[in-house]
Image (cartoon, rainbow, N blue to C red):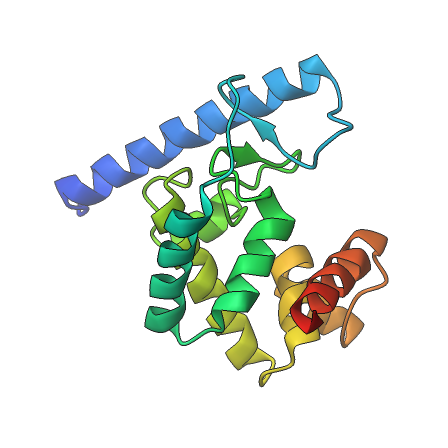
Length: 178
C-alpha cells in the first residue's frame, strides 16, 4: 500500500523527529553541566550571546507589533523578561529564542528557526495576540498563560499560585507602568 502522505509531509515529519532528538541531546548536555544560577537561560553554543542592539531591536519589535496589533511595549517587556533580549537563549525547560517559545509552540506558529530574532518576535507577538483575545484583553491572564500555559491559567481561573508566574506577571506589569 502506498503512503498517502506527500513527500513534503514526510520530509517535515523526519525533520521534526531530528530536531526533537537534537533538542533532547542539548538538554542532557546542559543538565550535565549543572544548574545555571545567574540566568534563567543558557546558550546552546557556549559562546557569548549578546543582547540585540536597541535600534535594531526596536525596529523589529515595532514591525511585529504592527502586524499583530499588539502594544510594542508589551512585546519589549516580554522579550526582556524571557531572554534579556538574547536571541540564543534556551531555558532549563526547553523554551528557545528571544521570546522563549517551547518547541510545540514553535511548530504551531510555524517557526523555522527559534534563534532568528525576527521569527521569534513575530511568533511571540502572534502568541500574545492569541492569548489577549482568548482572555478578552486581560493582560494578567494573558501573561500568566504565556508563562505557565493556558490550561494552567484556565484551571486556576486567573494567575496561578506559582511563584515564578506571579513574579513574571508582576515584573512585566510594573515595568509597563513606568
